[in-house]
Image (cartoon, rainbow, N blue to C red; front, side):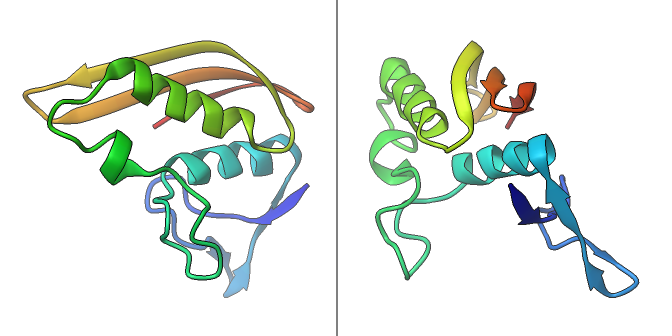
Length: 116
């Protein structure tokens, strides 16, 4: 599995001497997981069915934590190369209006930790 490497913080293309960088294996899969979890449904005009429906399931006034957990877990498990989720911690800070997710995921390349 190969992918164009993105910067971890800004998610911009990572360049070195004006050349695109490539990531492979576990690094590529970890990047794919993080990208999918930040991807809004309908964001990509070529396939509007891909992504998480944030406006319907996540960014609502009366959210359901079980729905949020299910949405994220289903999205991760639908990614090719992901075998299972070993640990899933979802934290909501109502005052800061922040959602943090930490996961340990078993993949075809071994285990990895992902947090968003």
